Length: 264
Length: 316
Image (cartoon, rainbow over all chains, first blue to last red; front, side, top):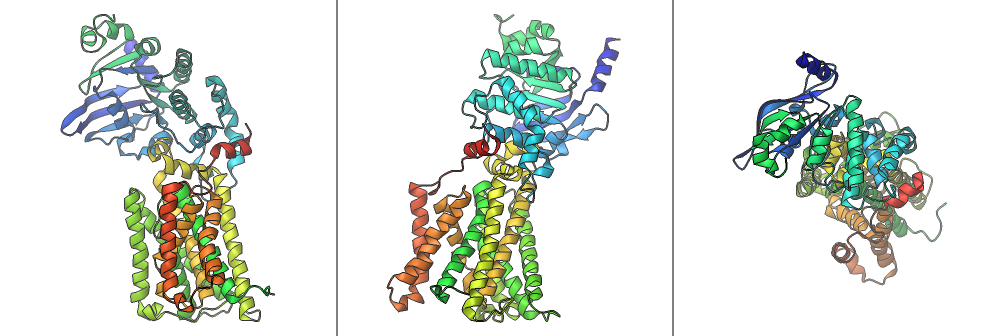
């Protein structure tokens, strides 16, 4: 009965299936996932000690780190599987699969407005002959962008993002503007003050409620326990446990390998 | 028609300045925005010039001027654009060193082809028979009108580059040049972007090459050497690679100063004009490049100011 309900929920939102995916660096196996489905629950958390392979797995899904072998597929809500591991890196966002970056990444020469307009710009406006398209593009997307700028309180969006926190937020807003159907967040709240962390969590909840599948890697375990419907515990390149937050939190292996005795 | 103070020598000097400004503006789109270090500018320019020359001289066209010029110039533009597409495809995923070697190699290949394909290009002897697509009287008047037409084309290139900075396309080019993996993660096909940029700018370089052939009347392989790329590159770097007006200011201060002011108004020994001046010119340009990179790497006009531009376009 419970399984039927879960299956019914899963069918309404996209999932990602990882099959036989292996990645090694200098002979050391960093990720070795036999069969894993992400996105069964609206918000899933991926935790594990440093070097467990969480970020590498995320990068493998986005094809920014090529697989040694295996296959990663997108199972869209409407059916019709797409093999992500054969798509070019830019094809992911077009399929609705979007990822925020663990390490701060930005365009040094683009302002905050620039960066967000870049994210929302449709390809037809970015052709060599479309040199008069800026006003149309701006008119189409300004309200949506302003909504996020106001919500997160960017001081001067015509300027460049200066602080690490501002760049981190900008990265998240770029992801949101891509209207993801499957969103991977790699330490999205690292370095953010509590108030902004709360705002990011609220946005993620709203997004998940509207049908987007979210997978979040986060070292701030309060975010994981408060936000996630399911938690996957990864160690030595494999997902060794998955379950609801209380069960993972109480699991002896997780406590021993990751949380430590004092955490529970 | 032609003002009295404009002699043939001055018209020729101004034409060179206008031509190099055009090339530097196109290079600005490649290097200044998308960070593609094209060291083969002269290859596309030369390919356009020789394609135009060969078609103009070797083909017996059933129609006269100006259609002969228009058809040959269009073909030169197309061939240079296709070459840009091919070279862009080859270097699209290479790093800066690979792009440098690839584009330099292409320019060398064009020069070697122009030298060895004797039947078509006249080889090292050169090829004559090119002329203006009109005749309004004196040679000086014809040259002055061609200078004005070429200047109009370069102003159009300047306007295009200026508009690109204010368009979503320009923003994409800056993003591709600034952080390619991040641009890809936003769904941007960076390879295709670079490919089309290369094709369009190479086509325009080819058109400028064809227009240069008309002014020169005589095609000589010595004119498609690395000096053309050097002049455009040095001018752009001096003015500022990231600024549209950097190409204009930089080329006026280098090619303009050397080819017009120094050669026209400094009392240089006559024997220098054949051998010494071209060598001195390249040495001076090389020295300027070194000095700018050492003391003002962003050029005289500095870096692009997107914050000011965005404030101006969309308000604060």
